[in-house]
Amino acid sequence: MGPPSEYPTVIIGGGLGGLCCGAYLAKQGIPVTLEEQHSVPGGYATCFERAGGKFRFGVSLHGTSINNNAGARILGEIGVLEKLELVELPELYRLKTPRLVLSVPPKDPETYIRLLAGHFPAEAEGIRGFVREMIGIAEEADRLHQKKGRFFKLIFPIQYRRMWNVRHQTLADLMNDYVQDPELQNLLTALWSYYGLPPSRLSAFYYAVATGGYLKNGSHYIKQRSQDLSDALVEAIENNGGKVWYDSPVQKILVRSGAVEGVALSDGTTLPATAVVSNASALTTFQEMLPREVVPGEYLKKLAGYRPSISTFIVWLGLNRSLRGQISACSTYVSSGRGPEADYQASLSGDIGQGSFGVSIYDNMFEGYSRPGTSTLMLVFLSGYEPWRKFESDYHAGRKEEYRKEKARWTDVLIRRAAEEVVPGLETMIAVQEAATPLTNRRCTGNTEGAIYGFE
Ligand SMILES: Cc1cc2nc3c(=O)[nH]c(=O)nc-3n(C[C@H](O)[C@H](O)[C@H](O)COP(=O)(O)OP(=O)(O)OC[C@H]3O[C@@H](n4cnc5c(N)ncnc54)[C@H](O)[C@@H]3O)c2cc1C
Image (cartoon, rainbow, N blue to C red):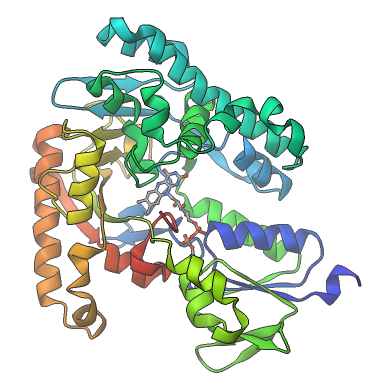
């Protein structure tokens, strides 16, 4: 192997994945060029302005697990963590069901257990067991990360007993081991929407790693916006000699004699590289960017068997009134009370009037988020792609009249429901509103079907 400088590498896409990878490689002296199709870095971790800059809306990352864990260590290693201003959220999340409102405290699993046990005394022991199990799994995963993922196969089941035991379990399986009351089960799996699958289909391991981490280490907001994380990552790449290009979509990965030799951009230019890393949709990368004949058929078959994750319908609102101190929640999840399985089906079919949704009031995350006398909100409904697929070809051809009508209908329903459940009188306070559908997600990030979590 020659020195790192002999391995020019192109990274396709400047989402958090591509940016982190670029920062690691640039730090090692590898000449990195990152090609981003959009005009700003960050993928979903970006922000945008409306009303001449009066409102700055964040697209994602309203609550991130970025303390005392793998994410924090990664950002520390590439010199980005110290550049971020993190705000610890006073509440992990608030869950509102037709029967109760539950405020989940950060870094205080005991209080969380007591709160739930107060509602379900007969299941107190099971609640404690389940919460401990999730935190235990998160701790084991963290320990493995600290050992750089190295382990001895033979003793893995003993060293990482909890991870081993849940390896084939769904979240529903794991929960059934501990608690039985369906309403309690719904409360304990309330964060299913963070993963986009209902408990019957969601990996117990993934749910436990993040949820256990949140319960133990809290949840953080990146001040001022998640765009600051993306910008700091770009700086880390550039400070180590890397380059980041915008408005620069990659069309093809060039291969000669079985080895990568560069990429072709959509304007026809080519860029030589000895390695290419793609942060673009895996389906697009392997089915469209690479020549078919170089991707093993078995791998293509495997990919075709995966489903893109669920997408989102989002409404951003700029209010002409300050909500800080009036309503205390940062992020409220409104559940229909029919359970995650029914809410997931409502999301897939686009039943915006019935499914669960989230309301984030950013001004409760830190003072000064919005300009004085105003507030910034985001309403999120997980959405399947199917309800929007019928608009796809017209949308791309610029015929958006029917699409806009449907988008306006969904927006109205979501605002009405947020007003009924979380912010009374919301309709009367709106100065600015914007909405994004799965088709918007697809256009802005290139993700297949506007997926927000890669594959299911
Ligand atoms: C509404 C919402 C809320 C969220 N909230 C949270 C949260 O609170 N906490 C949390 O931890 N996570 C949250 N997430 C998830 C998190 O934002 C994503 O997991 C993460 O940002 C994904 O990063 P990524 O790099 O994998 O992909 P992406 O962000 O999709 O990045 C892919 C990048 O590749 C670029 N690209 C694609 N094709 C090409 C091409 N051909 N050429 C050049 N560039 C290309 C795209 O433009 C994009 O920049 C949320 C997501 C959403 C949508």
